[in-house]
Image (cartoon, rainbow, N blue to C red; front, side, top):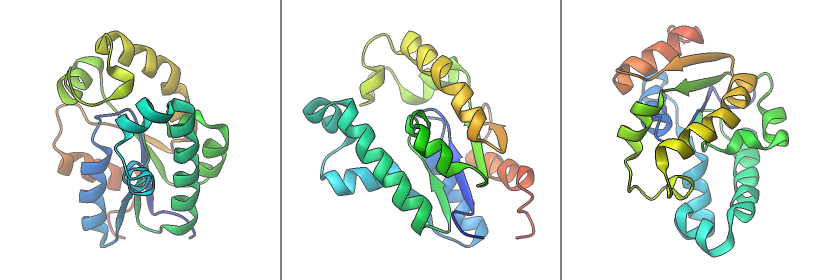
Length: 171
């Protein structure tokens, strides 16, 4: 198989990085997060990229990071919350073992906090999160082979559910 073993998509704060690290450990493979790749490439935090260069510049960096990771990473891959907005990225994910990690708004606010450095949630986080999810949920669903809820579950439980749904338990 070429491409990542598992690709995790979903909203900010859903636990893609934490669950991805648990999955990689369980599968005996490596973990990669495209947001981390972007920070390393840009030499600054994502919130600073948004402020200094704007969202369109960030989205271009994100497209490049996803393209490189899908082409060159064989382990567990976590994508940033907005990566699926790009049509080219969605096309790249076709046929890959993509899992949409989801949660409700109350859980999202609890996890992301009201003052966390999340540029897209800076003003009215609850309402903004709902709007983002309204826009993104169909895109997450479009690219995903499966959906796994993270509500009231530990990262280990979510990882187990991902392994079950992708039938990777005996991998």
